[in-house]
Length: 521
Image 1 (cartoon, helix red, strand yellow):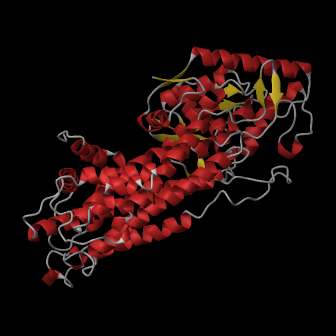
Image 2: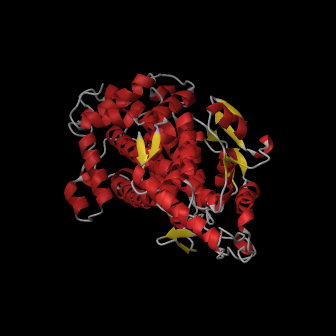
């Protein structure tokens, strides 16, 4: 059971709830803080003092006063009018991550909602009701207004209780109306009170949800990239000097030092390293610690920002003791938009240098004596294309990444009659980076696949050689999934099999055990 406090949620816990459906509860201390802030909202409504979002209109209509009697309708109208997302539905894991983060945001005790709002979100998570949320339509600035409103449609209602105004949700493996899903799960839908609509949809929560999941995946991809680098380095009889600890200490970038150390560990006991007698290698081998290490340093920074964001109060206004409402801009998604742009650039570079290693493995003039395109024998070239097309696919994905990695957070268009005149584009940045991560995973699978084949060919012609202990484990992990084939075959499904195992983290887990001195199970 994961317990929300509003301040201690981790990226690992987001993944556990989003992907493994772990249960969640609200801490008693957080509940008390939520109840206190809700009383402050009631006091503001009773006093009649104009406070944005509680008894005023929204955006450009902030100067329009709303009577206390109409506050519930104000919240409901906000949700109905703002649920205008479009595009393919987001994966269910993204919606679940966003619901958890939103519940944690409300648990900070600055939003003024009833505890029942958080309880409802958590019950939906615990019982498997997942709103169907369109992937497009958010600027990520006044929060992810449209996506969050689609969540709110499912969990809230009004006197009319119309099925066609309840959104859509998955429950029990079926997509149905939100009203039907909530009824089937036995979860009452709530009538919104003052400020509760704004508290539900104000904040870059879906951007943060995609960011958290992508950060988690990115750590796995960077570890995978260190393994595929080591495999390619051995297959190409690479030079070890470029990974010497003294060289990297002289530059003193933590990620670079880490990557070089990992490669040294992965290739320990290798008889292939330095076997060609070259003084130095091409950049895709020699400079890999500098490139992949920079990506790791970037990822560490991004993770810090994302973890702060998933524990942040991000709606507007926020309430503070003794009942003071402060109107500001914590909903603005710029922090997430920027770091997702940074991470997209970093992952695009990891994929790019991986593809360059695949190119070298397949080029008969650059691969230190291996057959061209890694066909079984030089005589088979022509009749067989070998790994020609997997390298094409990697190149295509790298080119796509180069487009997707163009920064989104630098683009802005004004909305709400210039009241919202600078927008973050955070949701687009997060979505693009998630796609870059998927493309990068496939590029690394192609490198692992090609490097495993290159190692087979190398050791057949160089029997006195031997792989490093950990590289040998990585090679066996690939071969346990797909056999060596002498002639051409349908490589695509086999590469996808390797990719899928990479995405689970199992490829890294087995190889890491060898580095740490354990016997992989």
